[in-house]
Length: 488
Image 1 (tube, rainbow, N blue to C red):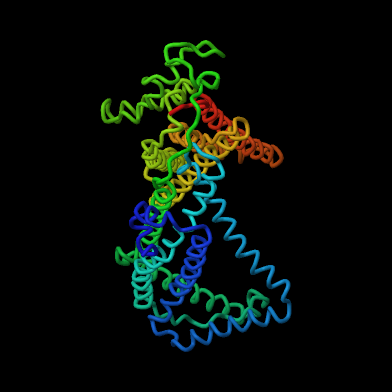
Image 2 (image 1 turned 135 degrees about the vertical axis):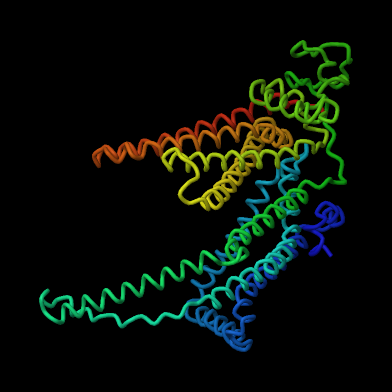
C-alpha cells in the first residue's frame, strides 16, 4: 500500500514503514524507478496509439528493435556500453543521494550527523514510490489536453494549392528577357498565395477554442502543481516524527559551553560567571515569536522574527531550540517561496514595462504570464536551493568545530531569513530592469566599449549575487552561534 499512500499520506506511511531497513528501502526505490520509466514511455507512445496512427504490434516490434540494438552494442563494445549505462544509472542514484543530503536538515535532530543523513536517505528511497503514481496522474491529466489540441489541428488544417514555384535558374536571365519576366510574375503569384494562406491560418489560429489556446499553459500548470505536491509530500516524509528519543546531553552553559552537571540553579557558571538559571531555568529558550503566534498574532510574530533574524542574529539564536523537536518553522517555507515568486513576477512586469518604453500593457501580453510564471518558479526554486544549501553547509561546519549536529537550528535560521531572499530577488530584477533601460545607450557606444560595458555588467551582477549569498550564510552562522550550546 505504500506505493499508493506515500504521496497522499506521507507521514502515516513513513510511521508505518519505520521498521524498513536500508536494503528494502533501496529495493522499493529501484522498483519505483523502473515502473516510473515504463510509465513515461507509455505516456509518450499513447497519443500515437490512441489516434490509431500506428498499430499495437508495430509498437511491440519497435521495442524489440531497440532491445536488439542495445544487445548488438553489448556484443560489439561490451565495456563501453556497460560504462555508458552504468554511469547513467549511477548518475541518477547520485542525484537522489544529493537530494536526500540536501533535505537532511528538514528532519534532523540533535543526534549524530550521520544518523540525520542516513535517516533522510532512507526516507527518500521510500518516498520514490510516489513517482509512478505522480507520473500516472500527470499522464491521465495531460493526454486529453494533447488529444484535444491534436484533433483541433487536424480539423483546422487548411488545404493549400499554391502555384508552382518558378525555377531558380530563371534568376540568371537578363532583366528584359521574357523568361525573366515570366519568373518574376510567377514568383509574385506564389508570394501572394503564400501570404493569403498565412493570413487564413492566422485568422483560424486566433479563433481557436479557449482550451486549445491555453493547453500549454494548463499543462505546465498541472505539472507545476504535481511538482509542488511532490515536494510537499517529500518534505513531510523526511520530516515525519520518529519514535526514537533523541540522545541525552549534559547541561551546558549557553554562553560558554561549560558542563553544568551538579551546579546549583541559583549559582553562576564557574567558567564565565553567567547565571545558571539563564541556561537551565524555566525561562531559558522560550522559542521565537513564531512559535507563540497563536497568542501574539501571526503578523506580529512573523514581523518580529524577521527583524530579529536580520538585525539581532545572536540574540535571536538564543531563543531557538535545538534539542526539543519543533516544526513551527516549517510553515515558513511555503510563505518564503510564495513571497519570492510574487516578487519575481512583479520584477518581470517591471522589466517588461521598461522594455516597452515605460508604457503598459506590453507589446506581447502573454509574456507577462509565460515569462512571469517561468522566472517566478525559477526564482522560487533557487531560493529553495539556497535555503537548504545554507542549512546543511553551516550545519556541517559547526559539526566539524563542535562535534554537535546543529542542523535543526540552521534549518530554522534559514527559514526565518525568508525576507532576505525576497530582497535578494528584488535587487536582481532591479538590476535587470536597469540593464534593459540602458540598452539603447549601450548600443550607441563603439563595439569595443560596448563589449567592455556588457562584460562589466555581467561581472557586477555576479559580484552582487556572491555578496548577497555571503551575507545570507553569514546571518545563518550568526543565528546558529546563539544556539551553539542550547539545552532545549
